[in-house]
Amino acid sequence: MLHTRKNAIRRGTEDYIIDSTVFLIMTFVFLVTIYPFFYCIVISFNEGIDASLGGIFLWPRKFTLENYYQVFSNQQLMPAFGISIMRTVIGTLMTVLFTGLVAFALSHSYLIGRNLYTNLMIIAMYFSGGLIPYFLLIKNLGLYNTFWVYIIPGLFGIWNCILMTNFIRSIPEALEESARIDGANDLIIFFRIIVPVSMPVIATVMLFVGVGHWNDWYTTAFYTRDRTLRTASYILKELISKANLTSVLGSDAATAARAADAAAQNYTAESLRMATMVVVVVPIVCVYPFLQKYFVKGVMIGSIKG
Image (cartoon, rainbow, N blue to C red; front, side):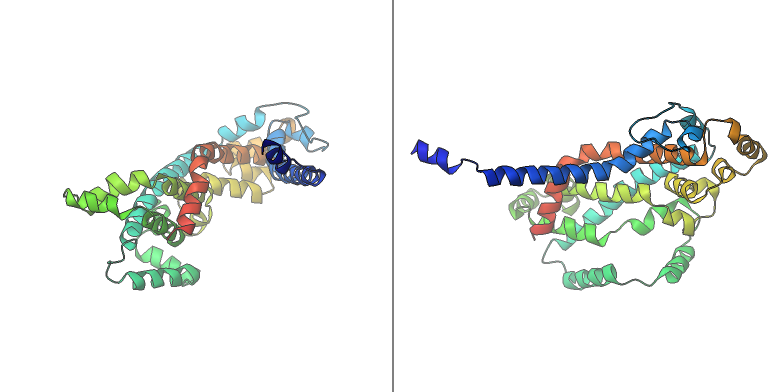
């Protein structure tokens, strides 16, 4: 019997060929995916004038911190980082809370008008009024050129709500029923039972929403005009889209003089863009590993169970 079991699990030549092929393909995909970001890091630590000559692939040829010094001395970037952090933290927490409350309500079959709400959500997910009506709505609500334009319009996400609704439906009803017998109301049930049990899907939605807030430059470009409301992603977008060093460093007399003297320095517009890109991307990359363990579980359960 034991001999038969050993023969049954013996691996053949085909198995090793398939494993080797899969390993080579995944290694190639990994390298193609990670190398562009790695290249940005390499260029950001290399002298800009030297990097413009080309031939740098795996490590800096002339190591320097000048690029990062120039980035962090930029008077626009640091306030923009503060706005991005505030927006990401406040927006993510409020969005998860608001969407979770709506999902908790929609998870109950006895909710009056539940099918109507669901159908309206599905329609709104595929059709919108367009940019101009949305802009007029934002302006009439008094959100234009305010910090809250980053928070309030995105409080409810339809896809996230569907994900959380399906997850909450998978929670045994006995937990809620026992709490109601003990006199708990809907808010107590939500915060003391639903939220702790739903941490996988909550972490997943937090990751979706947080990355969206951090990377969004579109809202800044169209719905704000105050320079103090600019986010780090918008500054990065400007640095990438503008080729001249004067635009990168600013428009005042002091920074214009620095731009005119750039040839004597060890940085270029390209090296500054690379350094800024690394500075903007690293924070959100560092957050991801802490939420990764919940990610797959939350998506799978929230998508399948209903």
